[in-house]
Length: 137
Image: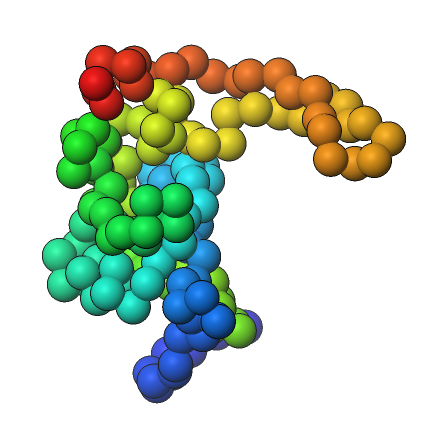
């Protein structure tokens, strides 16, 4: 089947809280690096600068990935899913994406789960690529 191009406009569904989830994926190997949330302003800054911007729900503020740590994300492709309620940032990652020092926020594999389904045993996969105590002191 041939690929087609159909340029149009759509409205992003930022939901009741004004945010949309965004998955950051490594442009080279496809690894999922992190999931964060994006406000309309964060999306605008990402498109305008080519650098990943997100909205921190815990700090209640806009932030540029790597502004403090130096572990930046250059966006090479920005996609929206079929429901227009999730974004995919395809990025060139400099250093680690995870604030705990790992390349990916998804550095733990689930090994077992408790009876009520809320607590899991995990095994850490991968190594820290930076020391968060030094970077965020």
